Structures are given as C-alpha cells and as structure tokens.
Length: 239
Ligand code: 1SD
Ligand code: ZN
Figure 1 (spheres, rainbow, N blue to C red):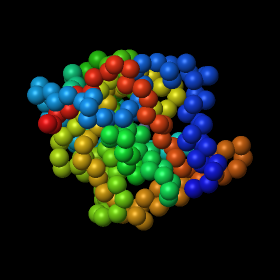
Figure 2 (cartoon, rainbow, N blue to C red):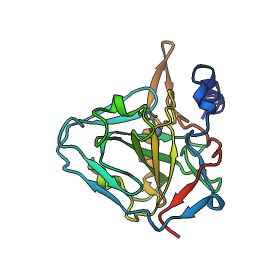
Figure 3 (cartoon, rainbow, N blue to C red):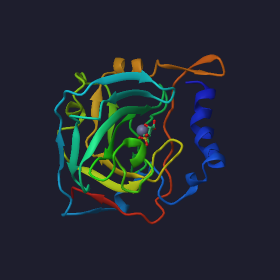
Figure 4 (cartoon, rainbow, N blue to C red):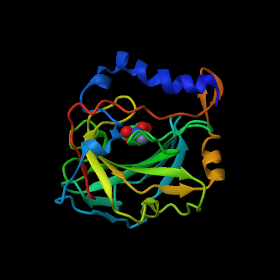
C-alpha cells in the first residue's frame, strides 16, 4: 500500500469539510465504540429481517467501493425491530477496506480496527417513498455494519441474511453517512460479532481499481476515520 493511498486515508476525508461543513457537526460517523461509552439497554429488541430474496441485484464499482444494488421498488428485503420504528427496505450493500498493511473498518472497538466493514443500507419505507427522499431525513436510513476479519471461512451466496453473523448482539447510535454529502440521517446498527472471509477474498477486494484524472488507481483505504462522539449515547443490546 503506497504512500499515495495512505494519503487518501489521512488527507482525503479531512478535506471534505470545505465542501461539506456538516463534516464537523455533532452527529457524524463512524465512531470509536468505546466500552466506557456504551450502555446496555434491556429495551433493545433483536433485529428482524424478512428477505423474500427475489429482488433483482446489480453489482458495480462506483469508484468508492463495490456496490450491490437491490430492486427496492417491490418485494423488498425488510428490516425492522432492534432500535428501529417501522420498516426499512434494503437498497444496497457495499464495503470499506484498508490495504495489505492497514485495517480498513470504519467503526472501531476500543481503538481496534477490523480488516474491513460491510454496510447494508436500508431506508425507512414506513415514512418515506424512496431512498432519495429518506437520505436527508433524521430517521431516514438504517445501516447495518458488519466487521470483517481475514482468513477462515467462505462467504457464499448473495442472500443478505447470510451476511449477518450468527450472534444478534449489536451496538446502536445516531449518526451519518460516512461519505459526502455526510447527511445525518443514519441509525447505525453495528454487529458485535465479526464475519470471517479468506485472505484470497480480501485480496480480491483490494485489487479493485478506479479511474482518477484519466488514470487507473487501486481502490484502497476507502474508510473514513472515527469522528467525535460529541455527547451521543451508544446503546448495546448485550451486557
Ligand atoms: O459510503 C456510502 C455511500 O456510497 C452511499 O452508499 C451512502 C448511501 O447513500 O452510504 C454511504 S455509508 O454511510 O453507508 N458508508
Ligand atoms: Zn459505507
């Protein structure tokens, strides 16, 4: 991982504030999930996922990550329960990763990062009529974050339910998109138990390219560093 890529990690997100002043606001993501800042909340329900697994899916590389989009106009994968009010439809999933020398999860736990972090982006279909409408609303989105650690098992299939770890334990807090325009519209649900993928799979993901100023560059370190909690409460569904 070259200096140039590390520079994207260290400098890129800090320049966002010029164009997006909200970058320095008080509901930004990701955050460090410090045990000293989290509180067990007995009222937190388990997550409930209803996947009819019939919607069409499309995979593309949008220059920030790979993205698997779902047809959320009908017959959707629906998430509810947990900290959420109402139904949230799955719109897309994507991932953030580092490089061979740096871990690339966005959320960290007591200062420790994982190799990568999968994001499953859902929008509030009980209250809004589209992703575009929901993305700017304070209760518009719910993103499930799943930590990925290297080596071990095969990650197979495209059924999003298979991407959730077997333990239902999670942290939740109110936050934002982690990329511009950084809207403060996300109820974050970060799963405690990481998923494992093989070293080869992680390498394959780290071999994606993107086009910048007419040149292909490796897509690496597409993770934003942790932002200040600014007095927010992190709730845990586990003790
Ligand atoms: O980085 C993604 C961005 O690509 C886009 O998918 C957005 C949702 O419209 O979500 C952010 S993130 O906050 O899920 N990382
Ligand atoms: Zn993301």
